[in-house]
Amino acid sequence: MRFLLIFFAIPIIEIACLIKVGQSFGVLATLASLILSTIIGIYLLRIQGVFTVFNIQQSMQQGDLLTEDMLGGMLLAVAGILFVIPGFVTSGLGFIFLLPFVRRAIARKMIKRSQMMGQGSVIIDAEYYHPPSTGRILDMESTKQDDD
Image (cartoon, rainbow, N blue to C red):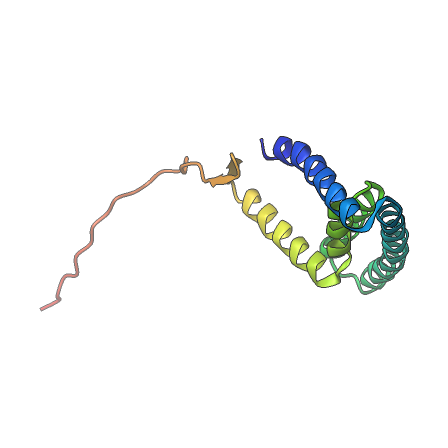
């Protein structure tokens, strides 16, 4: 449901933003800024991609887990897709995904969420649901006896 909302909301927001910017600065300036933001974004994406590949290579040489770096690379791919989509909002989101601390924070959250799911919980309507235990439950009482 959320995906459909985002899928329809982003184009509407982009069109409204383009109309407002076009009214304020003119059509040529708006088109030029769209093209310029895309070019700058793709250039910065390329630089960040090289750094990510370098970090992955270093982690592999040290024998570290690559989970966070690999998710960071995936988020860079998302940033690349956002830069290809024309618009100021998607370019802004792409620039946010280029920030290393943002990618690390999102990657850590994704890792934490996947670990929670690995412990038997299920996501239903974006809420975690922990199924009841199927093991046996023993209800016991104990008392301490004095040895007199």
